[in-house]
Image (cartoon, rainbow, N blue to C red):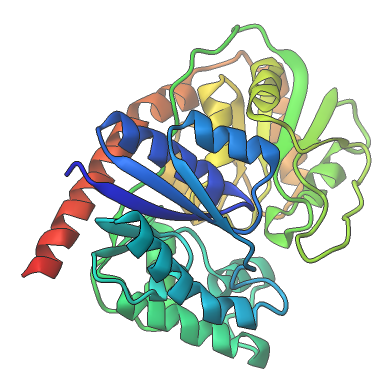
Length: 357
């Protein structure tokens, strides 16, 4: 390298944040990045892309997990190929399974962020493949075969993919990174933040509402979108106070105030939001699931997954205890943008060498 990377992204959830962060890091390392967004970026997302120094191309396509997405899924590979040719990409880095099925003449790298079958296993307790997800499963298998190289955001999701799809090939583990920040103050208000898409059952947001009733936890804010991409809006359970979607600046300001950040997730293959909260000095209170144990070790407080009573007990303790920097320190030491970018650039080089051979 340096070279030109076509980085496919979407406009829903953490993949967008991951791609912006990686794009900015690649640019700082001397690479040229084109962001290909599947979906329609908002005005603020368009501004974010300009600020990170990437050229943004968008195609209004549905993602593979959305309803009635068959025609868009079928169209995605050829459109990715077309854009890769037009921009002169040296590497295509796909972050969706449909995009990873593109027949391109340059190395294709796929990052595994999550998938529907592992979501179903950990969210619904069901490892079967219903008829409506058969074509999705075939798509994922095709992508896993097509990609020249693969990375996963955690060992957890790599193991899930290998088990659920019968995969037997190397997957490199590259944990996400996020820009370091210095907490605004060690003094924290009696404020708790929960963040995420309330319509996603994996986020399990209502558990926090259940745990908050019957005592005085202080202000408990829910930051995130309540409207489902396929339509409909989720109700916000009391006593959570919904902020709606927050800009990066507004969310960081909320993290700077809050004493505790809670993630009650049943399924979260890495967890960018806990990382962001930790870097702003929040105490992390996380459901005890394998991916969080992998990422955070003993630097945070856990509660029994899906247990409102245990969540309440640990929450009370954290609000009363002095603020510690264990999670912040682990985040700054292990999950840097520089490490993530270095690992992906090395993967691009190895992929190019393998394809050339």
